[in-house]
Image 1 (spheres, rainbow, N blue to C red):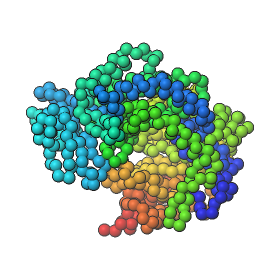
Image 2 (tube, rainbow, N blue to C red):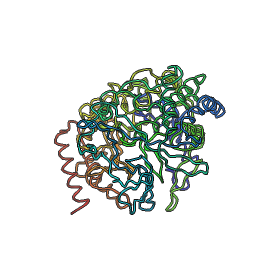
Image 3 (tube, helix red, strand yellow):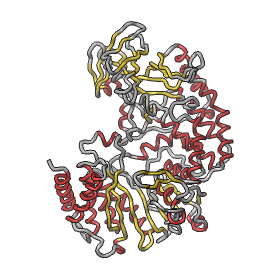
Image 4 (cartoon, rainbow, N blue to C red):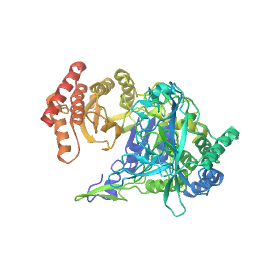
Length: 632
């Protein structure tokens, strides 16, 4: 963040002449920020989907070429996709609503897995209590007032019904009262789904929820027949099967064992048409690549794992809203072209890319001024830069960027070739990126976004640092840190952010750094998670902070840079108290994280640390710090 009075000359080129490297480059944030400050940017990631994202963050685009290629996609598939998402009177349908079915094993009844029959409500129901419920009798749509109605009443058939659905927690109950675990009722099979409502954009611009009619069923059947009758080369289909994993276990239990099953037939046909139009664009330009990469956002919001958020906010929760592949009992289907609205329709891609190009040429930053945070431009250098394909080419032209896909423990970077390493390594036991990235790769592998994009069944790799076992994480991370130490110039610095709530995870991280010959000289706690993060609010002790870890080669560590255990714990607690005093929401979980990280970091400063003793000491001092932070 620039300070008051900073100009382009003193704020934008602070890293000019330096090479900044990120071995876990992910979406490319480090590379972009380094470029804005004048550095030469080098990135590597083991996952090709991540590399594709980095390339979009950096590459310049010819806007005329981009518009021309987008126009080719429009002409080829916009109309046939939109025609499958209309009413009988040709009004656009923004969303169709579906509910999963399971068979009661005792009586054979098809049970609709509604948790509640109120399927659409406002994000702020106390202020806006109007909501929509579906009648269990005639399947009519019933307007209800959540501030006073305790049950639904259907004006079409006269039925008064409970809002409570048949599903509650892990169980479902049929109308005869048989209570069964949902997983047992599914018995490993993908559930059938029933379309029960739609949201229509009327001619007057207003939106209206309506029941499903015969024309809706006809259109879906038409799409299913088109999917079956279209030759494979005319559509792109998601390829591959799911493998066992932390993020895939729930999907597999529901029978979703292939990526194709994540989409209904109309979605497969519509997305397949758009994908084929992108695949068949001529050439191998950066502009073609950008359009294909943008298709991922559309796929992310148009599948059976998406749910409806309701009114007053973005309407669709994407498949990744809680970092795992969790099947939805009630799913929402939108128009993937989305010219009339909805979520992440491909029709909006050109507008989004033009905004991205504008940012890359003239980045916006934030500046503190009195008690306000202002958005300012002309405070950073342009981000857009061509990509080098080899290290030698990059050295000849450092105005380019160099991004590669592969194991970060083995690179083509020469010894002592980078000045600064800034990264964000994988977690020890959460968010398994390759398991999630395969969702996109299933489409991308058939579309070949750029020359050299791998044609492999999965992006998973045995060299991944991500590992639920602390010892496995330690061993893999140490290999990457050793490579970082090799390529780092004398006097250079490695720094990264890390999020972890378990002492064993922090110990594994610190031991991996020590194994690689790094000493941690500083740890600093920063607020990292938004207040609404599902994984945080559900925890007994929410952990909202990341810890910034600063390391140097052990042989370069300045004398006096190390702290003893007491100093480390005291300074960590002081930082958290400072965040609280500044008005930020912190709690015991944040205290524990900051203190554990600081205490365990002292182990990297010892020639032969007793890590078991140090781990126990970290827990003890963390507990004492919590008591001091929030005395009862």
